[in-house]
Length: 178
Image: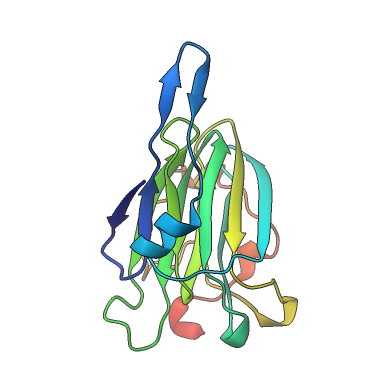
């Protein structure tokens, strides 16, 4: 696997080695030994999957305090723009974001350490998105930031009139309000 550092400390793009032949392809999507050598210790405890259609924006979500989550995310069908926003107090990149296109054909994954707000927009007709978490989801520790917070300056690559949000995601505060 190829581990690519980003402009935010701890956020890492992971590119697997893909072996293709006339039958199709094969790759390791996760190898604990390689992951821990490149990034550090991890104990994933929960896997999640979502299915969304073009224009859906999910996020920007995070878990607070002792329920914070590190995540390893990937797309198994379609294409998304995946976004990590640094919300770690005192971090030199606080309020900055990394955006990476994850697709079923590039097989890229994104690792987000604890202290990131996370979201994605669906760029294809449909997307199936999977992620591993190192802590269990706790509804009472849920937090979120407005997907369109102008201070963040995220280009979700979806025309404004075509963005589809949940009722909940349409009401989150700006980063400076949390």
